[in-house]
Length: 228
Length: 228
DNA sequence: ACTCGTTTTTGAACACGTTCAGGAGAGGAA
DNA sequence: TTCCTCTCCTGAACGTGTTCAAAAACGAGT
Image (cartoon, rainbow over all chains, first blue to last red; front, side, top):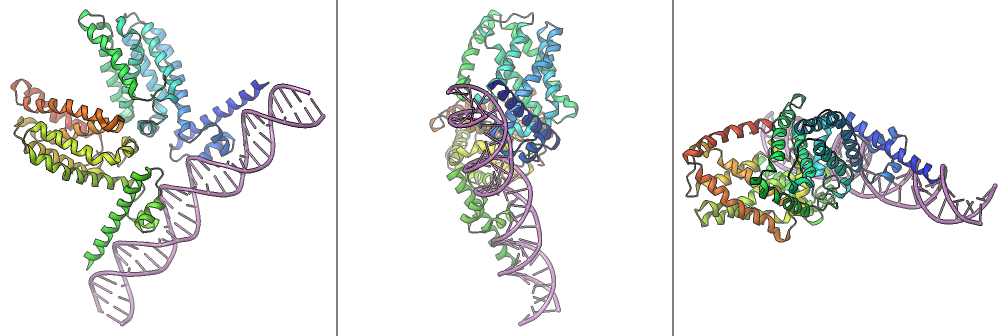
């Protein structure tokens, strides 16, 4: 059966990503060699390149894993409350916990992602899967809450929250404060603002503004070459 | 005389930077090898490494040259008007013209600079010289204008304008529109806003806000490891 | 069981950034 | 001139990311 072979290939692939991430965490990105990754995974260098086009492409595997871990870690806070602010805060803090071991690597990864057209960009076609996972998570954050948002923004709100999440991540990348105090402060300060914005979106006064949101998003989407 | 030797060394140094930049423009950063740079400059690879610690350090030379060219190119518009908006616009457009040949490289350079702690960051100690040249240029933009700004921000305004300049540059890096139409539009749209802010800074009503500016700048300065 | 095409794996080879032990040359002191 | 020292320069060698031709493993059809 072809199933068995495919499963073994999948396992090899995972083994390589796992080895890479472990070594990255241990020694950092630059000081981890492809030879070391291959050896740790018990495969040849060439085999690693069969699955991943480059060393940087291994980071894509990191994104996938991180998104998965985030969804799993957010389950507890999401089960605990229907208050939008609490759900949002819990989800962001869950990400912080999950990403913590990679904080030292984040600068290197972010720098690569910052390059226009780089596949590691969270907006790239290559990042489609983890991006959709995150957006779906934020959809869950909203839909499981007691807040009702304006019709005009409902469809786009999950994506907007994900962009907000990206903003927090950007701050986190540069945050060298002990125990990420400054990032936590940013979350605590901004989550209530976001929640209030969601609530107020239904106010008649703000409807015209709300109506502009999808347009703005559409315009932004035209700028980068993301497929989805 | 030691002067002669030093002059020759300086010339070699320049030769290497010039060769590097020419090749970077021609083939891009990655596809330019240190061997090619050395050969074009007529020196050995080791000699290039005598002057520059790494390939990336050559980019520092690019910053220096760019800042110098920018100051030179801004002289004409600065001589032509005392209107702050025109002076600012002229200075920004001069930068656009000077930087144009490097637009394709900018993404790569920016990505490196985005890495926390990277010497290529415009805020780093290593970028001190070009940063000061740019800040001085914006001081000239203000002081040669007819606008009088509030006492509270006068000292910091050149640096603030430089930060505004950096914002434009960031946009420019990602701008793929024909003839940089979108960046030009951004300049045209924001220059009047900046000018108005400068004028209004003397309004009694805005003084308390103006007073917070130096504090905010000081706080920001604490965040990054820049020396000056 | 044999064959054939496909997927997976190997490891040597290559190109490039970087290092280093040492050589060449200039300037100053005797 | 001769010697010393310091700056400038050389090119071979090393480590690392990446490629590639060939082998091995696998699955399906006969």
